[in-house]
Image (cartoon, rainbow, N blue to C red):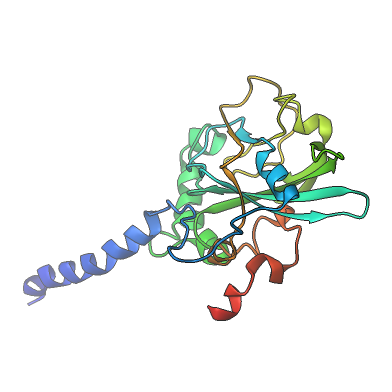
Length: 250
């Protein structure tokens, strides 16, 4: 009797396990504009246009999992002394411990972290996604001095370290890799962008954003990726302004 029921039980288990496994392993989650929604102003302000022209680069000194998104989203806040704080949101498709790091070299630690943190033992979306939402979003901010002609000059910045604590990035830190373009980078598999001490040629990947690839953060993306509780260094505006009116409608 038990033998006869075995195929049907196996089929039932497979029917349950396959979608769960798929949801656990489908880590690719990058922002996609919602069709038909007005996600950002059609004409940026003069300051907004300057921010979107200002090149900014993102990189890492270690190889890690996850695809870096094509767009660097931002929000900005003007200060009392003519400076502007720009919070940037960099989107990665996933956050996993596989890459050029000791967790991967020793195999078992990376496997344990991946099963629990990312995949929750293959029976759910993982602790990371359940707590913070899909994909991986890293935030950083840069404070610029604004000249009379609208030119932006990076003064200092901030980002998270590998232990999720915020670290101040001096101007020398921002320009150590590329003297012409502020660059933030990670030294950890989990993509936090508060790395310091690297020089030209030390990054294993290095992507620069500029006009057309730096865009005002749409409220629907902020809500969809729960940016009210992620990427803290980039939150330069209140939560209500970050999420817009979409939080109420959803």
